[in-house]
Image (cartoon, rainbow, N blue to C red; front, side, top):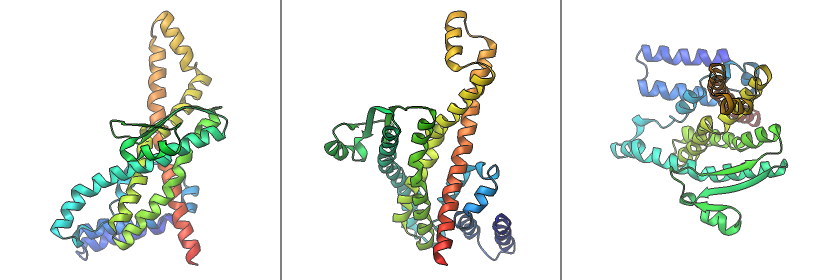
Length: 278
């Protein structure tokens, strides 16, 4: 199947070189292929391949509106208002995102020390229904946060990854935006996909850090022990290198987890579409 995807992309590049399509049409067709052709079987067969380039692919996958079909007024809206709307959409979607964090943490035996949502995105309504959930004005305009004490490492990873079960919905909405050239679908889908992308500096990084912490503890010593040693004896060069490796390795690993989980979501949606069309 991967060979089919690559061959289709090459065919469209050949059409562009023969001047049978414009550059905008080429980009739209490639986006359509990448967004709608990848299957769950492809992703499961090639985990290393599909863990790379997740940031770039998400950014490419939201470019589904054909600018050549827009009027000058619509182009201005597309250029300025749609990105702003996507940011607002991401903030609104972050409310269920944070509530899923809290719910999974509690369900796995953890404790939620604090649950706060941004009142800009409607947290006052949530607070009115569940007074234990705080409504705050959070700047920058993040959707909220959960201060959690997970029961164990496995429970923490489950809590971190659970909200991204919404990503297939975002992909499904973006595919509908592509098919119907509908900005409402685009705004809703882009909000969820932006939330997934944002996990690279949040949940996915935390998972990556959790793994690199464990590796460092196994082959060298724990970050907690390094902190105690540094307070007592000063920071050693070896500890500096170890801490740097933990931070950089955690980010790289989190990036790969983010990219692979996104491709899994995309493959799941596409495979489901093909199955139900039969």
